[in-house]
Picture 1 (cartoon, rainbow over the protein chains, first blue to last red):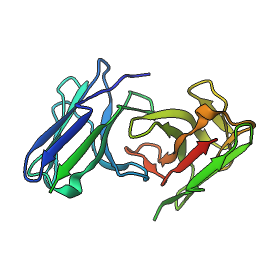
Picture 2: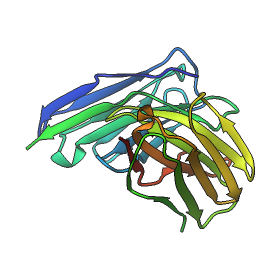
Picture 3: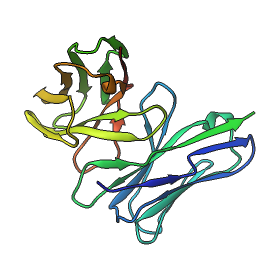
Picture 4: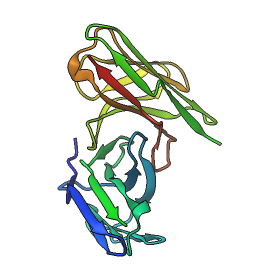
Length: 111
Length: 112
């Protein structure tokens, strides 16, 4: 099992502020995915990164995959209350379709 | 379009009773199927996965079992529930050669 560590565990910010969530591992991944989950629902895929150093943008969300493909970050610019949720990173090893999930970061954006 | 159905949404069962949770996928064929369990507000633990009918792999020893009687049907079962089986159970699927899982809406199981 490949261990993914997410930090911080909890994050509470005011609307309009920026935030960054980190996902780190000692393992190399062929791909890394980010999901957002709302209470009582299943996670929803936000983005997949597959190339070391890759940066993807989804509106106010910016995702980066580390050069060595062991870590990733999620940056939200000008956070809104609708960004509130549990953010999960998940890594997929080479020749493996199973995902290993981090413990998640609970983000709360106050209006 | 592809959809995934998971039921029931909530379940309260006494200790020692049996369990059957069902998950079906529509709009695709030969999917990889997964059962995960999630502790309150935390990460997901992979329980079982399947790459085809009758092919089940278990990730952790436990009181649960899984079956795949049809291509797009995945069932999670237990003969006798324990208190520690309480949790949020999620079914997911993906297509071979693609990235990203699609999750069902989950089942909140409380064993009392």
